Image (cartoon, rainbow, N blue to C red; front, side):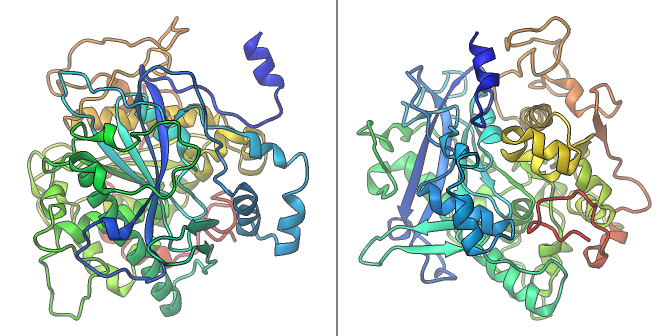
Length: 513
């Protein structure tokens, strides 16, 4: 009866997470004055860092947060403007009853729930930072990030204040008035002016990620020194204290870094900026971000750092200030025991040939240079998937994504993404929970109970072997070969080619012909 009522409910909704843990969530906004920073802010108007955090929680009566951030009307109108509606039309649309249903959509996680103590065998919860793409928010990937949390991770999803969110709000702090940050619509064809504006956005994003790292260190070691000025209607007096001494954020290479589209490009630039922070070529290269030499971040990013790139958008990485690091391999290729990066494409981005070749370049070692990495990088795409299939928009609006972008079964697409991320983490030594038999689509599995396959001697922690196999054993999940003639060498400058797939993305993410 409940499933029938769910189908009849016109409010867009998510399915339950399938991991063995209940999921809690908090919305946080921390003043940057509470955090050590080795560099001045790229924009003096940005006085806080904002993010949503997902985590395994103790069983509790759910009090789910709304998916559309507060103030909902402003975010709704921001999305409408992102989709090219004018201010008056955006305001009109926000009052239509059929569209206002999204105001009632909730995230299937418990707001401000108590953090579950980590299992004794792991000691501390593994941590991931996830960066959103253009038009994204701290809530826009909640199904993916919440699914990872349900398998035993703490996932931090920042909301970038670089003009890439449909709108964002910086609350008043330390005597500085509140401020709204509107979306910045930039062209998608490269030019000196576009490169300069994108680089300004990247500067802000990289700086924010550095602050997120400092926040994680404090959250684990001295949470009492952090103020959450974004806390609203809290029923938990110790929202931050419960994270003390339970986050695996201090040992080198332990934090995982992931992102979607512009967020994936952000992560590539961030990881390389930190890892090659001492590199100073003589060609006038000026880094967009440079951590302080004595920052713990410098030792955090190592060849064993897990990296996941979803629909990497390579264009922002090809300008003059970013091209030097673009020529450098990811840290994994400098060590035999490095963690191979994982790239997952939608079919739309797979068919965008020039960008797909750039993605191959990003997760490969340079042609002519010997890689120390023993294991090969992983790159896959899901058949009949669109760019939005890797965000919450797929499961929330399946009819629209099917009609507009020809994308089928967006919930399964997300499950495949989560399976691949979890298995890649296991092979990098991150101890996460088993993937459910239901998600693994094992015959006769009607419940999301754990499955225990035979031990794999090559990957002792591996459990969902098929999802990273290249034999096509998972229906609709296609491995992309890296060693073809269009690999690393031919990708240079390929983003200037205008060969976007007709169904690539919502207008505003990547220009459609």
